[in-house]
Amino acid sequence: MADENVYSQNLTLDEIVFENRNKEYGAYDIRHQYPRLLTKSFIIGTSLFLVAALSPFIYLTIKNMNAPEKQEVQLDLKDVLQEDKIIEEPKEEEPPPPPPPPKEEEKIEVIQNVVPEPVKAPKIETPPPPISKQLETTTGLQNQEGVKAPAYTPPPPPPSTGTKASTAEVKPQVSDTQIYNEVEQNAEFPGGINAFRTKISNNFDGSAMSGDEGTVKTEITFVVERDGSITDVKANGKNSDFNAEAVRTVKSIKNKWTPGKINGQPVRLRFRLPLTMNFEG
Image (cartoon, rainbow, N blue to C red; front, side, top):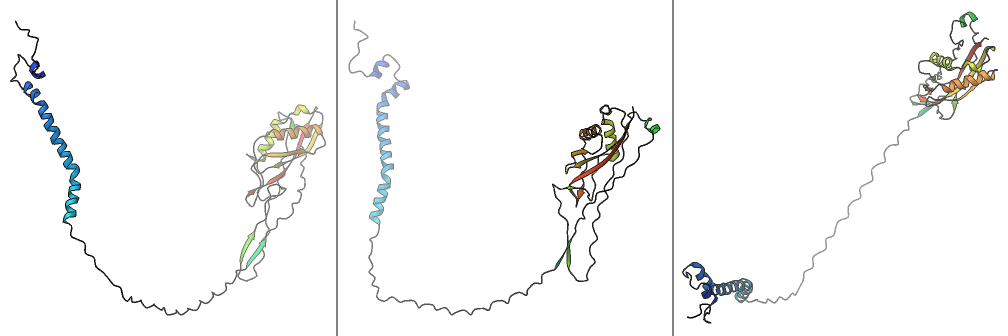
């Protein structure tokens, strides 16, 4: 009995794989013809690639072969005509325009508004009220209304001379550092001077006095700054304790004033406030 596992040396791999199987099925035919189809496809693909790569060279070679021959033409230049130069006619210079007539300068008459020198306002003292009126109060202190400086009135302009000329008013220069005694618009405390006197009365500490001084007078001076704050507070009365407490009381009031103004600009203004109080033991 022959060995079934021994194959002939002339058999191909496909014949060995499909031995004792249905060779009429498509798989055997495809595997059997695959090497021949692969070789044929390689030859056709290589041929198409060569045709595509060599077609431009073939086209140029055919075009050069069918191109007409070049003809050479000889030209002999004998005379060259030179163009005549164009001579421009000189232009007539136009006369310069006449100068404009001189303008008459407008005369400006300067009127200087001079602020008069401040005059110290006289002191106006009011006698203290009777003792019976003082006993009606709870604190035993009474303030006296301060003296306001008179309103500033600028001098009238000079009369017209009849000549036609424009006038320009020159306002006096306002200093930011100078302390004025008179202004156009006086400084004001919020609520008026009575509100300021009330605050002094409420904040005054009577315990600093011995109580048997009787009637004590002083004049408080201070500067209302351009921002409404109070500086340089002084008191020039005869009683030093009363002066010190009056200065402390004014400094303790933190409400800002409306500053005095000249030409609509805030300035530093010195304010004077007479103060009279009665102390009975």
